[in-house]
Length: 296
Image 1 (cartoon, rainbow, N blue to C red):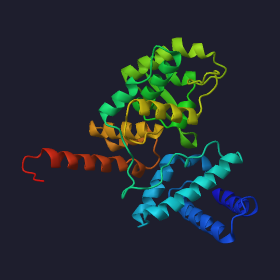
Image 2: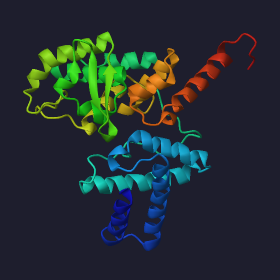
Image 3: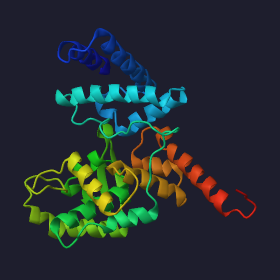
Image 4: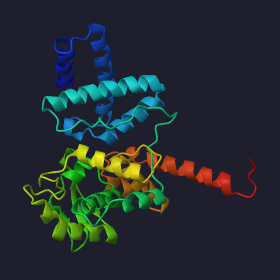
């Protein structure tokens, strides 16, 4: 299924982009490697390929011994391939768009500390309709660990305010139920009742832009970048960092890996296991800092 798109991508690179046969061959070789990985994971549909799957693939390549330069080349091939699919309406969005080029020795997701999350959440001006909407978005991303694509596709009827549960449609059209903590429930309930109507809704989605239409992924990304700058956060912030922080903080609080996997909507638990590695690093850092017998 996916292989036919790779073939058409190759023709596009040659005929439209005018790339050399050798360059096109390199692109296709990278993508053939990706196809083998997908087959091992039993992934056969384009809709099943998410940012999480691509992140897991990069970890797989790292474990095979590829260095940062080679990983960056593979990522560039994926970006171009999915960009081509998006431009030709074979795919709604490019899952590789916001993945960062590998720089660190180990590809681990960046996370915010609890204090950094609190600071970020406090930045939007909730006295304005846009500010309240933005605060609600940040609350939901962190409270539920949602992907941005899942957030922007939420519809009004997907929230059951009586129990504080969101019905989320994830990758591969798989539904999952995500509970929200009390504060996040409060923001979402207030937004739906009193703030959302101010946007004069033209579509049934929960989060709307100034025109009353569905908020875009890029709109959420720019919004979070803006608030991260105002909060003076040193990390390179993206919407996905709140998802990473959600998972990491749950595990630090004692949640089991299987529960976090279900909440994140991961089909493969190995995608969730990266967060246990983060916890191990943090525990080691705390041990080195706090143990009375440790010496610098």
